[in-house]
Amino acid sequence: EGENSFGSLQSSQLIELVSEAILEAQRTSLWTQPSFITSSAISLRALSANKECVQLVRDALSQGIRVSKRALKEALGAAQYIGDSVAVEELSAALKDLKI
Image (tube, rainbow, N blue to C red; front, side, top):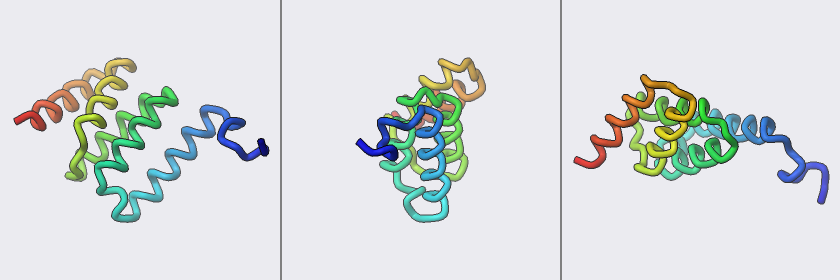
């Protein structure tokens, strides 16, 4: 294994990489793809980047981007974990809207 393998990176470095990918994607049509939002939310949550996960999904929602049920559930779990009651309400409402 080389020094640049993902296995040798710290969690904070991986979070930074995912965050950079999201910033780059926001400049392209990739940002509007529900699958990108979902995989990014899952990745951030897996890295315990709960605040970043919540922010990602809230940003997408605020820009009118369609967000998958899975991404909403990831962000809702993250919001509950960090105790962000405003985000919990917002994400719960978005999840209910999806079920209509």
